[in-house]
Image 1 (tube, helix red, strand yellow):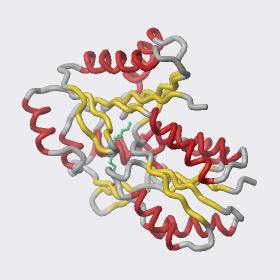
Image 2 (cartoon, rainbow, N blue to C red):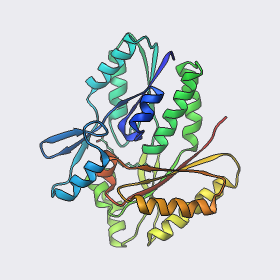
Image 3 (spheres, rainbow, N blue to C red):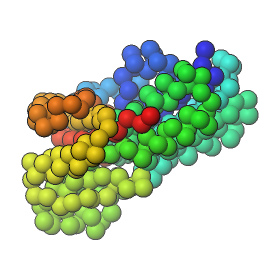
Image 4 (cartoon, rainbow, N blue to C red):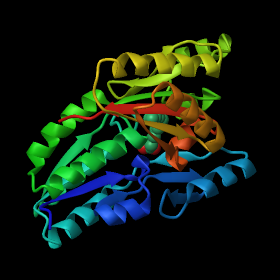
Length: 284
Ligand code: MYR
């Protein structure tokens, strides 16, 4: 049995079968429709969420897990015999999930808890989790694993294009000036995360131009060498994402591609039709 337990939150969108197979523990974030609160990936699937979105007028909100959920999990992991936990989360600048995990860790004395802020979310967060599992299975201690995760975090990239910037603004993740410029010029800014916060990277007028620009950024990194893994993430627009994968594959035949999805919590903030292109470079 590994000594270090690996915990993450639902926004890594790691399929349940994979989590079970690899012994990854997941704490869900919540989506709130009026009076009804749902834990994503647990009692609300992504398909159910986008279906519900078609039927409602008042858009949902989201919330981080309660500290008590982390406390309960860390206590259970301690009872199971783990000595350490690495709790890997979405950017602490866009959600209080990481802070909740750290606070819970300080409350549970029987096990050493290390919070890890990926400064990102979704598939790039999942890649960090998978590397942590690999190293934990090799018998590495938490501090050694975290040193390696820091190197991977440096290589994580996430660019995304949304249909409607109002979702991000309404949820407080895009400031009014950024919303104003986007709406005024009817542009489709390429968004990315800088120091864990969402900011526009470049203003382009069409989605086609946005993806062409993202391709040139990938090209400039791939040309420097290394093994790359790209994930295209979609908010209920799978066919478009698949077409984009085919298009990217034609330009990068040696790169590994994967398809993923923006689940309920991230989908609430980005809106249906959003597409992300993320990648990381393998680290020795
Ligand atoms: C909460 O209520 O605590 C969750 C807030 C989540 C905000 C999500 C904002 C969008 C992040 C997009 C990341 C895209 C990475 C590929």
